[in-house]
Length: 256
Length: 377
Image 1 (tube, rainbow over the protein chains, first blue to last red):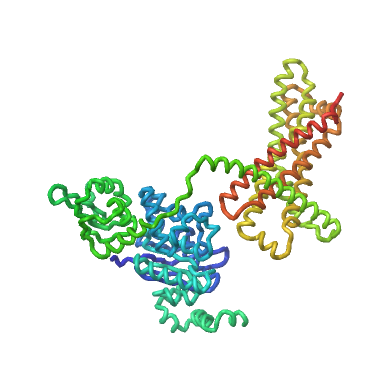
Image 2 (cartoon, rainbow over the protein chains, first blue to last red):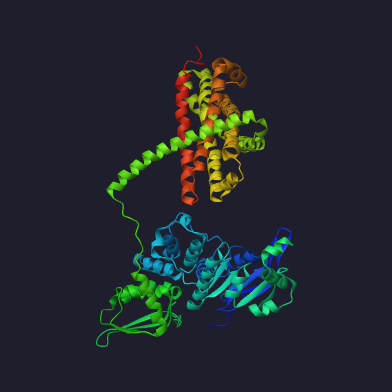
């Protein structure tokens, strides 16, 4: 495999009005890693994810995906680059007017490469991959539970066989049991499909179960990029607070 | 293009026909690599037959798209002669298993369904009627409640809505009114000139605009502008669960959401009618002056004699009635929106279409009911 980082951010700065969210941020993510992006509320984690997807552009700095500048090349080239990653949005962002099967088939249908029979096979395959039954194919997004929405959204994100998977709060809003099974699913897929995964999370359990590396976003920069154990041992004040809060539990922290 | 060497990752299929009868696959059989060479590869795949030996040992990567492509090309069963590395075999097995999972098909459309759809429409209409009456009834109850508890009037909401549907609509209403006045006057003037009946332009414009055109024009404008906005706003509040939040907080949605809109529109519409009619008359007056040399002073002097005062009140009453109707219809459809985009668009369309249709229907009723009032001579 190539040694080019899958995601490379150089000198990213983002401004919201007068507020400087990212201040010359650098981050590079190697192929095959599962990197958890953590940081306090409003530290710009989701914004950073949106920069990587290309939904927003930083005020300054460069975003490179697969070794190429995100916005370089013509429209066709940019579109091709976009098809190399899949995104799981926080609320799932399923198309509410389409059934589960149509949602998953949509990205493939857009490419006009597969026959209808193949599309059916692939939808069944993706449903199976994320642990849903074929009978769920005709349901509408409004009829799905929170956990199922995440699974369908994940199936849609995987529809184009991406090399890079971006997850925004994958376990937010799920009960502990569903959260654990979703985490297990992501880990299985990460291994089976040789994916590079970037996930934004608040949840320390998710983080410990999944991440091969933790990127800590504080004061507008990545203050640490290391394994979970090494990150926990760090004495940066934010990291200490972050893990301390998880040990004592958020309830006590809220009571302070 | 032709000079460019094919990169090794590109999926390749070499068919060796004749005695050996082999299909040799090479490269990365992944969605990304397959997409540029999809159709020629598919054509080649068709040429293979049952006895072909499939050699996948040169495939460096196979994803589920490539596996499904092959599986379908094999006619949904394992080929008799297959030489595949374990990694490929695992992916193929997964695709093979998925192919046996039958996705449920939406039931086909039959003749009986057409009849059922027709029946559903009739019941749907009855349902709309009941819901509409219930909404109006609830609003009446709210109104009575507010009369008893004058401290609870949602005055802020009403005033905000008056600004939104009334004040902000003034520029566009004036523009449309003015242009319609010019057009009407210009076209009538052409005909009237032929008969030498120039001064009747005042009667035509006055009666037409004040009694009929002004209210209907404003209604169509407001239904499109504010009616759709009201429906969409309430609909999005449903999608974002804001309606549920209001209910959970013990705040009546008819009282806080619907009533202010209905009252604001019923109050603003007569004013808008007055404003638009005036602007249309101004347009007509200018056009008549330029076209027929009818002085503005004469026009203004003749207008009260040509159009008796009751016509103005009929126009205002129509405005109030239409405003009430548009807001009621808009809120009715808004509250029926389900949390998906399809329902949002369908109900917003239905809201505008129904409002305009109802306005014209009620206008006809007005025309018959007031046929003896305000007619000169």
